[in-house]
Image 1: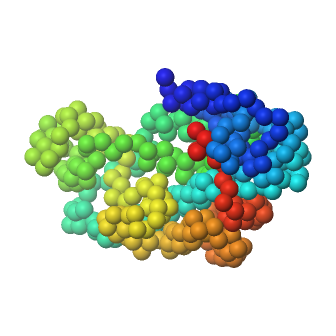
Image 2 (image 1 turned 30 degrees about the horizontal axis):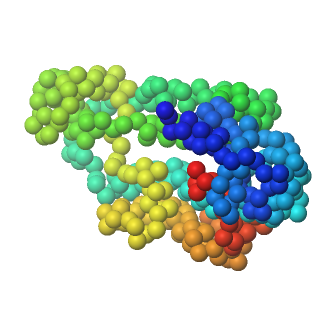
Image 3 (image 1 turned 180 degrees about the horizontal axis):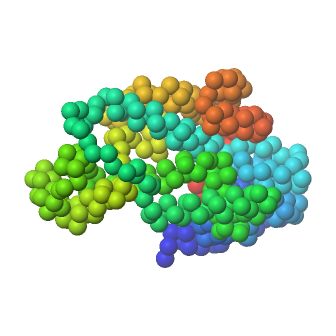
Length: 371
C-alpha cells in the first residue's frame, strides 16, 4: 500500500463530522493523486483531529462547508487565494491565520530561486579559486556544446511551451493545472521563470555519475591529442586514478566530445537546493563543512548573501513569533533584496493581517499533527 493511500485512509477514518465547525479550524490541500486530483482536509487544531475531507480544493466547496458548519472563530490556512476567498464570503468574522509551515516553504522557494538566478556568480568564483585546469595547454577548439537532450530536459521544454501557449489564450492558473495535470505551484513556477533557468534546473537534477570527477582529465587529454585518443587507453588511465565505471561510459563521453555535444565540466559548486537547505536550517545545526561551504557561497555572491540574511531574520520571526517586527522586515526586503525575495515580501504585504497573526498567535493548521 502506498504512503499516499495510507494517508487517505486515515483521513476517511476520521470521526463523524460535527454540526458546527471547531473554534480553531485548520484547512489545507492534499493530493488524492499528486499532480492530478486534490482535496481539502479540515482539522480541529485544538485537539489535532481531522473533522472532514472535501473532494476538491475550490473556494466554492469550502465556502459551502463553512456555511453549513458555522462557529469557526479562527481559521488557519496556507496562502492559497481560494481558501481566503471562501473565508471572506462564508465566515467574515473569523480571524485568518497564515500557517507558519507554509510561510517557511514560500520563503524557501524564494531563496532557491535567488540561488538559481546567481549560479554564474558561484561558477565564476569557483573558477577563480581553482584556476584553469591546464594553463599552458593549447587546446583544440571544439564545437559549442549543446544542452543534452535527456528525457527530463525535453519534458521541461515541452511543458514550458504548452503552458505558455495556454497563458497566451488567457487561461487561468487553475484551468492550466487541470489541463496539464500539474500542481498550481508548478504552473506558477513555469509562468514566472525563464526557460533557460528551468532547463538549467533540470540539467542540475541529472545525476553526475561515476565519470563526473574524471571528465576534466578526459577533456584535457582529448584537447592535447587533438581528438586522436583511444577509448581503451583513456579508460585505463582514469581507472588507474580511481575510476570504477564501465569502458562504454568513457567511449560515450569521448564520442560526445568529438560531436561537440558533451556538456561542459561544471565547477564544483553546490546546487541551489543544497544552498537553500543550509540557509533555511538553524546555523547551529550545520556541520563545520556545511558552514564553510555556505561562507564561500556568501563570499561569491552579494545577492545570495542578502537573501540568506533576510531568510534567517524571517525564520527568527516565525520561530519566536515576533509578528510585531514583520512590517519592518517587509520594508527592508522591498528596499534592497533580490527580486524573488522582494516578490515574497510583496505577497506578505498583501496578506499582512493573516501573516502577522501567524507570527503572533500559537495556532497553526494542525495538518501534520492530525495525520
